[in-house]
Amino acid sequence: MKDKVIITAAITGSIHTPTMSAHLPITPQEIADEAVLAYKAGAAVCHVHARNPENGMPSSDLNVFKEIVTSIKSRCNIVICITTGGGVGMTVEQRTEPVKFFKPELASFNAGSTNFNLFPVLPRYKEWRFEWEKGYLTMSEDWIFPNTFKSMKGFCAVFDETRTKPELEIYDAGMVNNIAFLIQVGYIKKPVYLQFVMGVLGGITPSPENLLFLVDYARRQIGDFVFSVCVAGRAQFPTCTQSLLIGGNCRVGLEDNLYLERGVMAKSNAEQVAKLARIAKELGVEPATPDEARTILGLKGIDNVNY
Ligand code: KMH
Ligand code: ZN
Image (cartoon, rainbow, N blue to C red; front, side, top):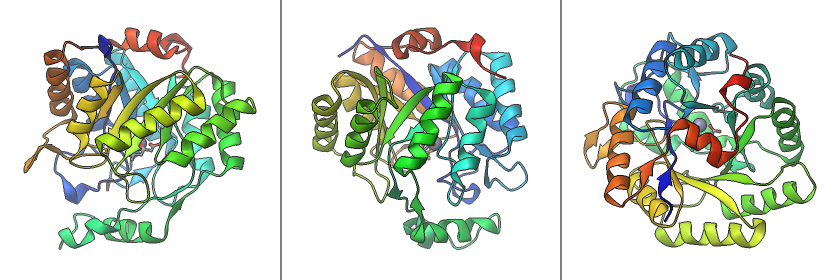
């Protein structure tokens, strides 16, 4: 175990839709407020997606991103990690644009293509708050989340140019191999930061054995790295706790899990961050500050971003 844990709060994402929780932040103001509250609860990093303020649909609009990141930066020094995963149906260009423009310290980098399926939740809802939601979730049944080697090469060029550290999102074991290859050919430089993403239908399921396997496999393929775990669904807290025990970091947030505990919806990202911080402290692990996270991850610093 390490004595510090980097807690990331993934604030709103693009998996959940407004009907699913009244607490899902939608407007730039709501997203920024949630990030600041998550910081106060112990998060060192916030992972940021944007949504159309009118209807909550995932968006790649630079003006919306700008409102979010400038508002967060004006109030706290949390590390901002901008998504390049975007949302279902977005092009690679739309996904890259916010990193090109804002040059953040950290951004997600999806380490391979996968079936990214959201459709199994459809039968749970009879009525929708906004018209687009049902079609968006239905469309995912035929969606391959595209991260070909050609597009990953493109992402690497953008990350290099902007000196943005990639948070390498790994949905399944083969993606470890993709990263090892990108390191070998010089597109990605070590030391790397890995985010094991578990529980997406199309990727690996969360279990203690699977997390141990991924970490061990990555050690054999890549050598040393810093890692974190995020889980879609109810295994989020147990798997994050396992990550604490084996020296990893943790990502929580409404992006991937709308609940605080079984049957109890989270009212905010901060509630989830506070719960994880509590568990960590009980185990003798302190939440890292944003500046400590910058040192652990080797980030370029908040003075070198473009927002
Ligand atoms: N919500 C995760 C399952 C990204 O933003 O690049 C996927 C994700 C991808 O966070
Ligand atoms: Zn995301």
